[in-house]
Amino acid sequence: MTHLHADQKPPHTRILAPQWMLATALGAGLILTGCSDAPEETTSSPATGVTEEDGTRGEVNKILFSYPFNALPVYSILTEQTLEVAEDRGVEVIFTHDDMDLGQQVTNLTTYLGDESIDAAVTFPADPASLNPIAQDYMDAGKYWVTYGGDLENQDSTLQFSFEEAGCTLSEDAAQWADETLDGEGTALVLVDETIQIGQERTDGLLNCLETSAPGLEIITQQAVTPDEGLSATNTVLAQNPDVDVVLAAAGDAAQGAYQALVESGRDTDDDETYLGGLDGNGSLFASMKAGTFVRGIVTPSFDELAMQIIDLPVALGEGSADEVVDLPTYLITADSEELDAYIEAFGAAE
Image (cartoon, rainbow, N blue to C red; front, top):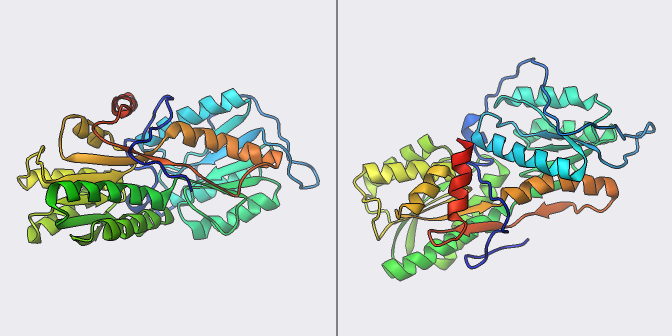
């Protein structure tokens, strides 16, 4: 896997980052009931079906993207980028509208299975157990299946973004700060996500690298994904450990809640002996970082790169040239990063 450190920079393209956590919003936001509304389509260009009559698979001209968190601001950012890439590549992309609903995602994918014009599906599996047989159905029907943000047993390829290494990047930055600021001693709260693959691997990276690179830190863990969960979990820990020095979160939104908890507990926003960091962009945290607060590190993928792979990976499958795993790099953004203003601007545009 490719790993970029703090002295490396995201590509100098239009940077778009999610205001809500890219994937682990699943843990709190997904409704586990279905509904029967027919899926709506958003298109970028006319399409022609290319699935062969004998069931073999050919080139890809039409892609289905199933990302169930369409109520979150990240959805509009990611779909806008993906539409632009599809237009550039001369293919069509359509999107399911799952309304934060696992049942609706299953219903929509089942409905689109019968659309012979669709050549490939790129899908974030809200529930892998439910979607694994559907993935096999797509492949049996002559369509390619790309799993977004994780792995399924049945898939042609998977699109990931350095889950474990992203956690390690953040922990190493926090450890360096703790060594320089606290002589390596203190207490660290890690807000983990054990609900899905992306969260579990990020949590492993956070904990393993923090234990290795900052052995003098006492580590406390709490499960938290959303801002409310981050607020509650941090308040619980602060009640027993008011002098927590470092807070790291496997989800950027949980870090937002942790920031609120620290400030409400009386911590100065520019406290020199506090480090707060999270994985995946969060508009509030980027703005706080710019303002000179104790938000010191955010590790995020480039959403230009994600959008390109949502289109290019299934197209490459159709050409017989795709990798089984595409693992994109992530980038450490700090107050000194030249790209910080671009991230803030992108979030403002998405609100």
